Image (cartoon, rainbow, N blue to C red):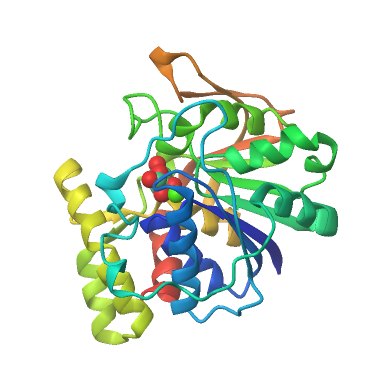
Length: 307
Ligand code: BDR
Ligand code: CA
């Protein structure tokens, strides 16, 4: 069993990552922290609590709200991808979620969990790295005690999805990404190079729904419609990329990926904002995923979430 905390900017694929984490017996979800990214942090927090409530997560699972802005820049959101409510514009019909909100700020809770669990704790981050960077800047020594960070982010050999060279999570807060990638902690980076190979097709959702359906799965099928429509317009896919769930799978079964130790530099100048450049380095605590068994990641995801 791995103890994890999820740091999310919920978001369609973050919501899918949350559901996957809740339904994975290999993981103990200790807490969820939220950050501004796909939507404002208030909305990301509301969405997180809504997903937990619908999935009947235990009320004692702590949710802590984090950074409302990147470290040094104004926030850029992704309403065109995720909907203005972050979940495909389908959440208006739900009453405000009752899942409790913890009193702590996200980066405080991250540091508290590191103090409590140290090397046993994995932080799985699927949004901009602002909360992690704030924790690292405030208490660098303690931050280095974390077991591992698994971060969805970056575009190494492939085109970016937010600029020609940059992936969204890194583009939104490149300074934070630079802090975290240089913090000297074990970190696995799960970039677009692998997440864009893991594609959930609409036809697969339909097929699974015929086999086994539930209230949560109906919600999944509703909140993914706009996300799939966007990706269909952009790339002709009849489905969508499972970016954030792929990072959760990287914790559950790292052997489904090929990992390369590397130093990763983050560009912060305007021309190349958010570009991630990886140079192989055997002594680096950072490893980047360079290949993935996409069929098995997809199967693991669907067996647990599409039902
Ligand atoms: C990442 O950006 C966000 O829009 C998604 O939730 C994912 O974390 C993909 O680039
Ligand atoms: Ca995300």
